[in-house]
Image 1 (spheres, rainbow, N blue to C red):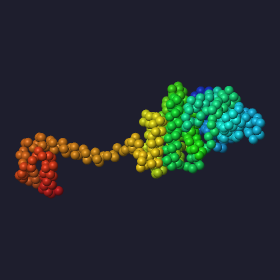
Image 2: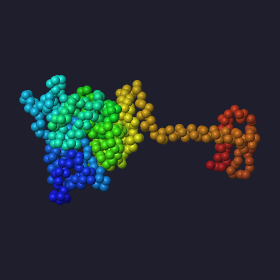
Image 3: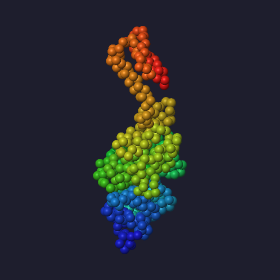
Image 4: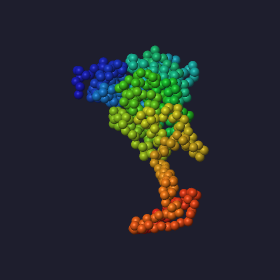
Length: 470
């Protein structure tokens, strides 16, 4: 246990929240938080959210004291996990409509949709355009953090750069308001995580349909040079009735050439859906999102994540070092080729995964068409090759090699051995005696082919076996 007088430091907790605490100090604070209930309470008070410590604990459990690495993952999603404590909405201006909670800028606020560790999501109404919107507000406490404001603005900028049907658009952003907020379309429906919690595993067709749309949205982000870095069910929205899929929460997104992507020892993301290179704090590129997509597909088909452990550190180790249990052992309805696709997405080395999200999107779309019309649409050749086993044609190859070997031997016999002896005779040696048994045959036309030779050799071998009393 750490002594309260020396290690319980409120200012250090604030610096940790602001992202300004040196990495060496983060390791010490992380260890202290794991053992000090008083400081955990301080963290909850500072964040004004009773669930904040649970998220932070999972994040900080990835700290490795030996290397000084730190983990500070994304703890936000849209919509946020249910059950989070409500944040006071005293930043709202009064509304003339008593049915409203208040007003934020030009938007009337109807209700709170969700609350996460870094922000809250409100349902608003845009009178000017006569439409409902989702207003994401940076947590009032986080708004005092320079790091929190930077991340919030980065999310708005990253998402605004992508105009695509499978990415939640940004209508507006006010970074100067306290607290800052951004405005997005209101998507009636639920997150993929909520659907998984409610119904469990998905069937193959729905998995292909949702996976294809996620990959298409990722392709649009990657085309803008952005790496999402936090692909997980909580950040995938399923629009009600339309069943359109939308990617959200680009708070961890970075440009592919951003130096912060290559900074060693800094881990950002959600442990169960990280790629191995993310978990190690190594350099990442767009293929890190493909690994996470593989984990999402696995989760949809199995009903649970492939990398589970009692602690965040245990999860990260499994991500880096272990191969998940084969999907078909969990769900026998999964086709072998779909298991092979997920396995390729889960390659530990990025170079062994698919080349791009666009490639994955096209592949899943063609597989979906095959599942819907198997007699009219064939399975893509690329997928068929993934399930070819090394020994699949071994018997055929063995037979072919045997034929080739016999042909070579026959040619050798014709060109080298037969000219030495009388070509009208076959000498058969009896292993039971030292005498030679000569059988004279009529000229069969040796040059007419190898069939006669083969028949004579067969008869000779049978006689030899008979003489030897096999």
